[in-house]
Image (cartoon, rainbow, N blue to C red):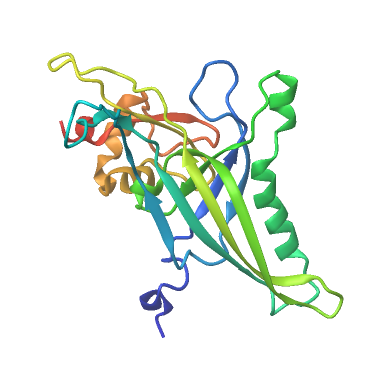
Length: 240
């Protein structure tokens, strides 16, 4: 039986949460990768929120109310559900460790304290080609519900609700013909990354790897060292 038709095996793309040190100074790039939280099961639900901020100042002289003033868009918010289960191994303490790993995203990092810029980690949610849900963020809350325990009281099943708030980054680059700023994203390569896989996740087209190679001056696309920072051009540039 071909399990790939059921989304099982190598064909299944797992969601993950990359947990980074916060940047130092005025940088808007995430710092060094601290750990990658790999999902045991892909989310069964995920919600994204985007708001526009309008301000209304009441005016006594206006009968039908004042005209609202647009103040700008607000950062994206995302809530993702993470299911953890070790009921097949009742002696495991993996569920507890994984929940604590999520809780640590709400704690100030030692490195940021040493740099006199206290901050919690920056995180990036990744799930295959779902680029809408991929952005720099901080974890605003983690709620863990333990639903199964072993005979010693160790939790072996839990559902976690993790709330992420986008951290807006500077827009880089400028289109010389229109004068409009073009947004780009920086990706730090991890083991298993390739230009083709990054192109697929970023643009939905593996053949667009040449755009990434050209933007980063890469002569040998078959060699991508983990830890390398890559500038990923925005979709408008890739289509140009």
